[in-house]
Image (tube, rainbow, N blue to C red; front, side, top):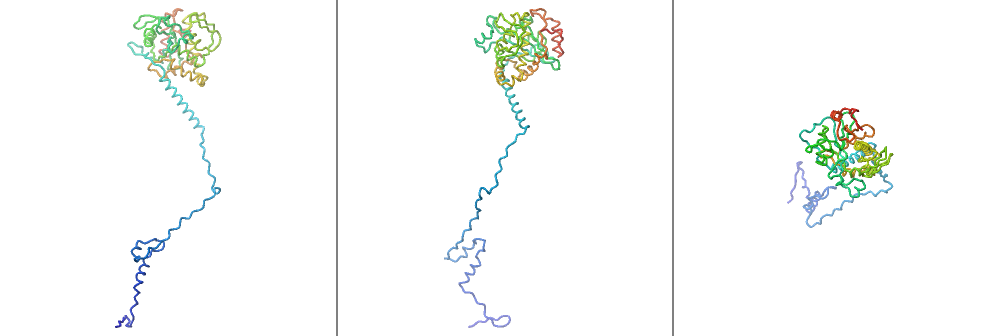
Length: 400
């Protein structure tokens, strides 16, 4: 039986031909092929006919690499930029190094110098007035000296001298708060004064009886001055300081021959080593010291002026062969009060620099006789009042 298909136009038409059965799957598979550039489709496994091998895809080509350029084609590398130091940076670095150096010295001295409780409060102690007062003591301490050192320095025998500690030098250094001159005042060691708890005796006996504390209290009671600082130098330390800076330049007016120690110093300008310097500040049994202790204390002030000036000179401070031996010998030579510090000592040295040039008033307590045992009460009071009030010391009370 033949079926016909009639269209809308009423004509007879044959139905459209059906594709062969085998091509339907191929046509479906062609429609599921991935587009170029998209890679493999996740539907390939489901659309691939059974038994047909999995299609192989060529790997992508490797990236194109440019051939290396010859070394001559590269631009020359710029040399590293050198750091330039300006004048300000160099100066700042030098200043920083100098400050650190000074700080190191300060710390070294601060913790190396020996301390003692010399200044203590007590009932009736003089009140602090104007200015600052130092008690400076030169003791006969032989600490650190060998038997050979004692013989070389002619320090004498302790037992023969009565034993105990004594002071050949007792001074008060007054530093004013105003523009008046500083004063270096000597107290003769044989001065008869009241020693607390021991009656009247020579002033240097206070050191033998009670050490620095009793000596300070005795000086305060005799002068009425409040002592703010204390410094002590022994025999051995004194000689070591002088030797450390290569000697001290002095001009000696007359030949000095001490009959007690056997030390001789010729007249003329010369450099005194530690032995000669110690003999010079202690000498009183000589034709060159007819006033005995009065001449000795005058020589002591003269030598201290020369010593301080030489220590503070650029020739010493900038010379490592003088400066570092001085630095190493100072802690063993010096004893300070427990409340004192290195900057206090520096202030004293700066104030005393003018001894040699006349910038410091140097004097001895006015006495009534050449034995220097008794003080002139009226003149002494004028002197001490001037120091208390930071006023100029009257010329009439200055003894040299």
